[in-house]
Length: 211
Image 1: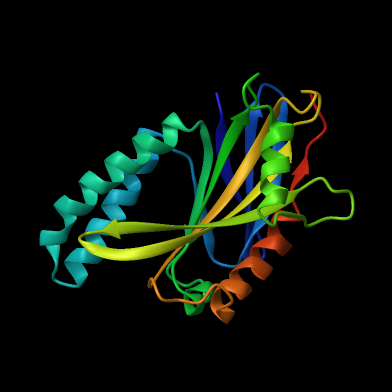
Image 2: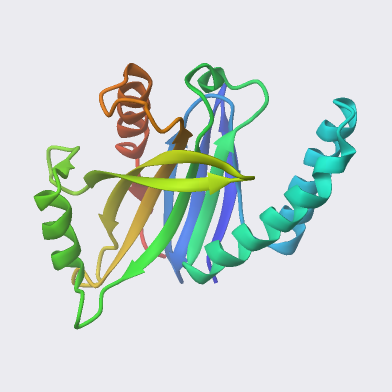
C-alpha cells in the first residue's frame, strides 16, 4: 500500500512515501507546498477546507460542483496508482506563477510498453535528463482541456525515475500540471520558471536505504 506524509524542514517541506514494501523515497517541495495522500480522510479534509474558503468568499453555491470534481479526480488518480498529490498552500510564493499541482504515480512496464520504450519516446519528443547520472528524464506535453465550461490548455511537465532493483520494470512518474490560457506561448517565462523550479526540486529525489 502506497503511503505519503509531509516532513517540514524550515520553510520547505518534503514528500516522503513508499512505492512498495520497504522502498521509501523523499523529495523536497517548493516553499509553502502541501502533500496529501489519496485516502478518504485526506479527501474530506481538502473538501472541508475548500468549503470554508468558499463560505468566506460568500460562494457556497460552488461547493457542490467542486465536491463532485474532487470525487472524480481522486478516483482517477487512484486508478493511476498515485502515491502522492502536492500543491501550493495559501501562503506559498509560487502563486505568483499561477496555479499548478504535482502528482506522483507508479509506472509499471509491460511487454507491449516497457519503461525503456517510454523513455525513448520521451527523448524523441524532446525529453532530457536533468541530472548528471541520467537517472531522471523530463519531457513536456500540452493538451487542451475544459474546466467548468472554460476552454484552457494544460502544460504537463513529466519526470520518470526508475525504482531500484526492478530491472527498469517499475518507475515513479511525477507530473506537474499547469493550466493556462490557450494562447500562452510555449516559451512563456512563467512556464520556463515552472520547469526550472520543478527541475531543482525533483533533482532532490532520493531513495532511502531498503529496510
